[in-house]
Image (cartoon, rainbow, N blue to C red):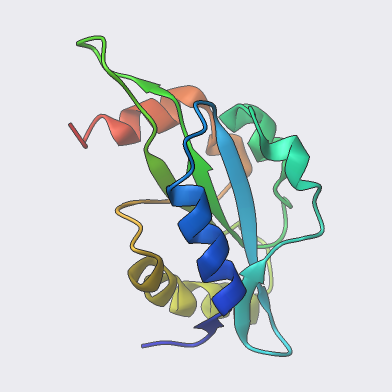
Length: 143
């Protein structure tokens, strides 16, 4: 089931993000424009701040009481010495936000994941969960 469509400009941004040759942690936030019923880039934040950002710093930038979708490219050092830059899709759905908003985000998540072709998909209920240990444990399943 699809609740909200994905903004074509956001799909372009995701494509550029995916094919970037940057060798650092990077992120951007996505939100739902409730009036247009459209998933869009959350441009209320300065994107330059999201270059070379740790997962803990990113957690501090995400609204604590509103859902958000996050694309995070992480410098992952494997046990065998290899380094990769997986793009993680993180759905942040905090406790205490409006139920209608939670349902709108939850109902739109799978369509966004599908059209953006995200493969590493995670969900948290609190930004306090987001730290490097959590991320490494999640990525450990993708070897």
